Length: 443
Image (tube, rainbow, N blue to C red):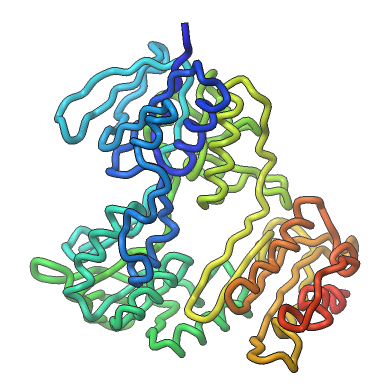
């Protein structure tokens, strides 16, 4: 008799696990339940949909339930798993359109319930015209409201908030970004944040930092953001103050969480319960620089989690060793990329952190249209072990960060970076690549 895999959550991790398990073991019966209207989509593309650069939100969908069905994977949208009977090896499913509930058995279970937006504990967060951005339906709702809005306020100056700020400016909207911390992109070091702040201002975004949002007000719909300093008129408000792992269902039947608040898993994505896996934004990883549990809710990590879990469930061998915290974002004409630890985080983690900050260029000085390229390199005093890097450049030039990310995966040092033979030609790099310039300046 064939075994049955049930997947809770049908986006990146869940559908990667489902598809990989079915490909690896065609005899496995696989069913995935997703409460939204879409499966296997790229939510990372939503800011670019809002900007108008992608004309149809469904272009963000990688595969439909119909395509999965041809592979032998049953994917049911608008179906939410509301309860797990672990001892009975079954899940209760709510058919959100049909108005019924039913039980489904499982032999193996993957929890990929993702993350949920944080709502600040203030009045007015549920007013019409106030949004979060997490699912495709969120993007559709914002797009519908955006046509009627001129004054927009974004609460939170992290990746999503700043990407949407650019999107709203591309639509010709007034944009104010309010951030509680003293600088934009608080996860970055101050040198990087300062360049981003300058770019936002240059493109017409009003930036307000070190200011708390106290309430959202309006009659019938949002009309203003009340801050600790002043009132900001608003036709539309985006709350982008962060996300948290959506672990409620998992913990209700005994799945253990780790120190980050996400589900604790081993290298095969197994939880503390037999035959239960967790993958994607709901699960922890290990940070390979610190060796400690780390939560990195990004799509590429989710896909790797899912692929690993699916392979193991199907009887194969796979492991996910961990992450180094690599990420990149586009903010108007700047590309900002990170890997490893910031200088601040490295010191908090107990390292004797040293750093260099250099300004170079992305190509030879005589080649047409050069752009500035900034590098911050963080390393350990004495040993020279690389701890992290941040770069600010132009478009895909920021992917130079992947060189440092690769070295971090191998415990590399400043000397290892300095010794690399990197490609050179005038259209692509100065004769001394900016990363090598930074390495040469590290003491």
